[in-house]
Length: 420
Image (tube, rainbow, N blue to C red):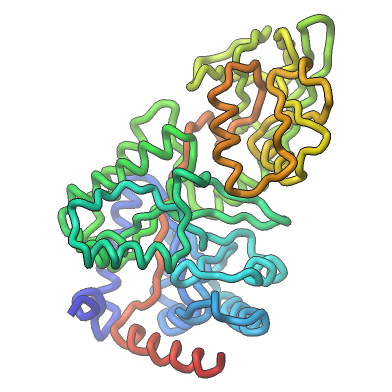
């Protein structure tokens, strides 16, 4: 019955939902990113081309809607090449990928990179904003089973930020999404959905992280008011929230990775700073004095528009690290926009870290929090452009457009499993 209510025999029902989705996006001035399976695009090219011409960003959602975590390297190469050909023949451009069920394996990024994809949005971060006491034991088990299936990380332990790896950007999705709330927990109260997403928005804003909404078009009737509330709130905040597509976030992360800061000692307590960056970079200082105008930002940081200035500080406003620090730790600190210097002289740096010989992704959030809690004089590029505190992206997957597509999904998965 749920499927029958969301999809019709023809595309008319889904087109109506897409129109509602587009109307919200247009009225609030944002562009969504839709990931669509290639076989669905192949069956309905006119509908998707219309969305594309209206400015919607499209991404590849696999060739069929299957679990690519179970697919071999050869199968993924075959599927993704076939998907690329469908997009090209349909004259629909793309730069990114999101896996069905948010499930990939160790070979997926390698395949996507070799095929020229710029980003993948198949990882997920669970923000823990659901009150278990409000739901039945069965619903709560269904919800947690979904998170386990997605292999979702906890926001308390991991940063909700893009990761740039070998020329390829991983952009996490935020949980709970529309499916988790509506289908697993049975939430139909629109105010409750709004409350949950607004809580995620506030937490990502407070932490300077990324909120990637996943809202499938077929559930827009349940989540439309929540989506409006979230984007309107994002527009009210100051410093602002950067609202962007997944492609724009990927492009920015690549752009930011090219920035650099030269800090040259000019005398006792004085440093010449030269920033090599684009105009939209957010350059921050904390507990330092500068000879150019600055504006108050957040967390004791001040924002500087100048790219060439003199800074006064009792120590170098950079992060010093011990000589045995892991390359992964150095890469992370540089990604966070800091100047990093390896040294065995701790007294010469605003902040000195000597316990980074072993470093994994799980260590990133604790280290980030340790740095932010310090009162050390620091100079850095911030994570987001335009002096934005955090970022928001609105996305959705198009798995089926008609009831026939949904039935064919079952057959396509059956055939795929037989091949595996």
